[in-house]
Length: 389
Image (cartoon, rainbow, N blue to C red; front, side, top):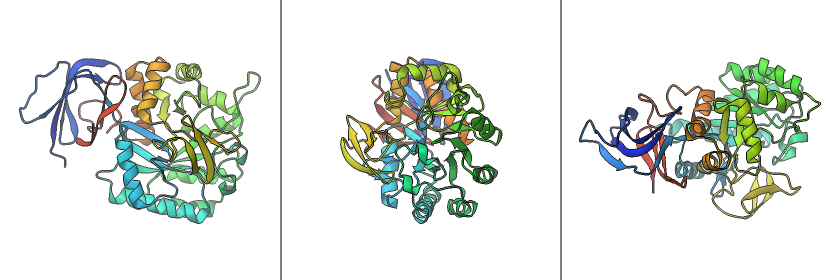
């Protein structure tokens, strides 16, 4: 158990429904012990005081869709690289994430799943990488996006069982195209084994989406992207994804994948309780412009925008604190709602919202401290400082 005791004083504490200005947050035994709406009033002199004057105190970010950064990709990296990625995410305020795997040749996919599951099991007490998101391989080639088409597979239940068993319970989320033949048995098996289903990289229409929701799908992957566009004379997948309160929408809030005004429409329709911010980040994140291999394809990064050879967007170089800043400064969403989209919606989707995802007394001390420019100053996970700038 973490025995560190911290008092974060004089900060602007963002709770799910309000901001406590000049408040204090007391962390003990890895938990949020006390929230006070005053600068100090410290109950115990043994707390290490951290002055957060002028700072924003938010719940640690949760990213359920991220492929990597700093030159490394979860699909192909070594165990040492996974540890480096964990530190990278801490430096951007992420206290919980799902390592996301693009489609790979089947044998390589199993190896990647085994490697990540072993890492999660062996480092569960201190890593922010808590599980795996399989983005495919059962997606539609017609909406491959930045993925290597040759690695996309038709549903095969026997193959799926091998992948699931390799995951040792650490596969938490899978993106599928629900119109594919043979996908229903895989979806049912995944849900029965505690794996959430997200609809994405699909050409399905609204009726296909309705059926997917009835079978247990709870998310839509990077909404507006790699799916048919909204048409006013057609009932499309996107329409149902926006209207259904049974679906949480993953949102890449970088101003490139979705225009800020369109994000406003989505948030008004879905509310902050059904939008989750993701990065869909690639190995180019925090490295710079140039050519890279990502998801089995050569991509070009120019001005921070990642594109495949055909010009299609192929992931991002986004980080979670920049997504939060975009939502607040460009989209005009208040910080309590941003905090729900950056943490609590994803926590609920993963079934861990009773433990983390918001600043509430008794919850895990998963915290990010930001300055007014949304630069990360401190990241705390389970009451332990993981990054300090």
